[in-house]
Image (cartoon, rainbow, N blue to C red):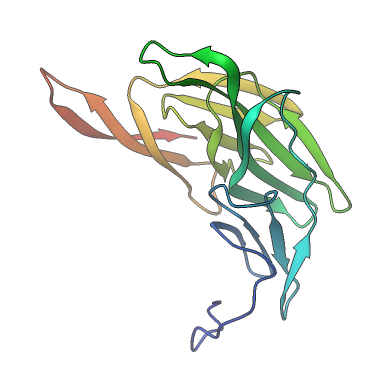
Length: 199
């Protein structure tokens, strides 16, 4: 559905949508949680949703039960779109301390330049779960642990640790302010709500 100024008319989507990003006529969706097949993306063309093919997100040869996911989308401009998520798989013959199959994951950020996607793999570890524009031509990304934020600007990634757990990111349109909401550990088993601001 899309707000048209007076109501919420329904539109057919070419694929499942788990996250949406953008503003005005420049709106995109990505598929969200792992579903059968590869992740999907679509963009609003002014009157309907149009599928935008997504490259296959590969996993190491011999991986067991591979899953790929695009969790969120950050729209910086018509030809500057980032879809973030990751891949995960079970390692054949390896088990954790509890006897469960050992799982590995790797974050990925796909960049749409107006004509094609370009893949930027992250290191082994938690996948990306959220992305928000930074208001200055870059973006902030949250990993699945909630304890690490990464910023992509000028073609480079920088990483920052948070003294707490971040649950959600939000960019304040028209500014360079990005907010992170979450919690910090208190005394004993108590936690306190927290709000961080950058910019």
